Length: 139
View 1 (spheres, one colour):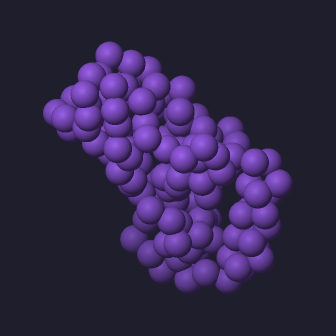
View 2 (cartoon, rainbow, N blue to C red; view 1 turned 60 degrees about the vertical axis):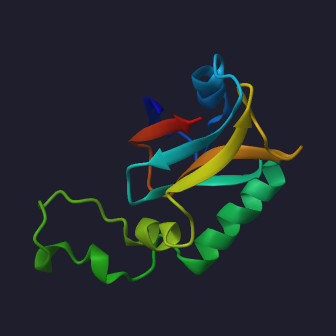
């Protein structure tokens, strides 16, 4: 098993991971399986089309379903055992529930076997953060 960990600053909601993955896979030969995992609870990994209007639709749906200004018990900091400067991000946790933190992708000779329009995204639900993404490859 091969492994690579990267830290990505999420300055936008959808970060295309293909450049990082391509770098990781560039010398792999034969067939295998890639796992992409994010070690956080307010972001996700998603394979989807990277078309800008689709991404906007996803964002609009999430804002409608789980508005940032919604009332979330998670945000009642004074009754939780957390630091006083804890992030108010109940909306981000709710949004993440409908996405995965990892995905598996078949690989052949260093290339992901994705469909024509598919990309692998790190999806950020909380404001700009540094995120740890782990790639593992099994041949």
